[in-house]
Image (cartoon, rainbow, N blue to C red):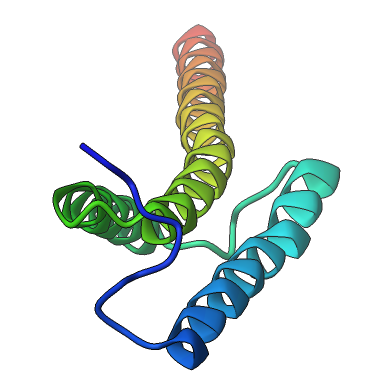
Length: 122
């Protein structure tokens, strides 16, 4: 496996575009990662979107390894790491919401039981 920095199948202008694309991919992920870290919320993110993005990263990563493209692999690793970071917060948020609903349901059941007891006493 010999990763090539520049793709020998395309000319220098296309290789420059590939490098620019990698920098754009890096910088497009940074604002969302920072915002997610600051607000600790991913409510606006669809779980399906994150799953599809994660799947695409694995597919493109496998392809970039197959064709020995270091630039494409770096691009996918950047996207993969930001997707995992955001996904971590999404999973924690889902777990928190699930536990919160269970606690609320338990409290409502206790209130209903107290109401039943007061009705039976009268």
